[in-house]
Image (cartoon, rainbow, N blue to C red; front, side, top):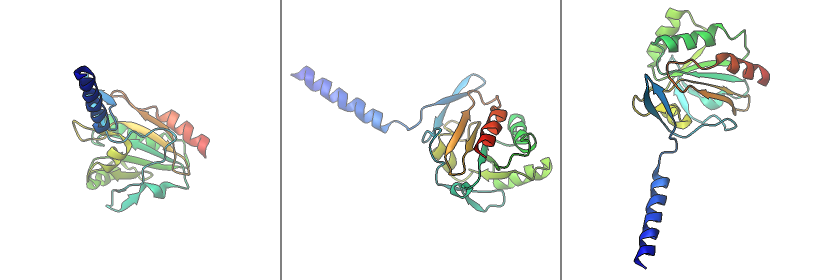
Length: 189
């Protein structure tokens, strides 16, 4: 009788732990160290979360406003690093004249994004900043718990706001396959 009671209590305890576990338990690495991603796991086939974050001019942009046109969201930890800079230039310069919203999302301050765009002579991208509370990172499962930066990723969203391609790189030093993202976007147009 006591044994069954202990098993029942243990079962309830495990169930409570599972229910309290974070919604996302994926990880990425940097220099061999594992980093935990936080937030709701975003998957292909799901709608882009209905949140708003500021652009480089501090204007709040709703992700729902992207509907009606294919979008590519290039997610980077910080535009002031070499790999993030390269990913942003690829999105801007190597997209082959793609008819899509081209967006870079980072946790950099909007002022830093504006400076970066000016210095890099990039005028065909929209920069969105998740600096306030990491709401974009939490809503997409792309927020790194340890650094509070966004992980490196690229996603393609169709005209209805549904994610049709998502690549989260396993190592932050690697670039996502931007050519594949461009190809998916072309097929959606």
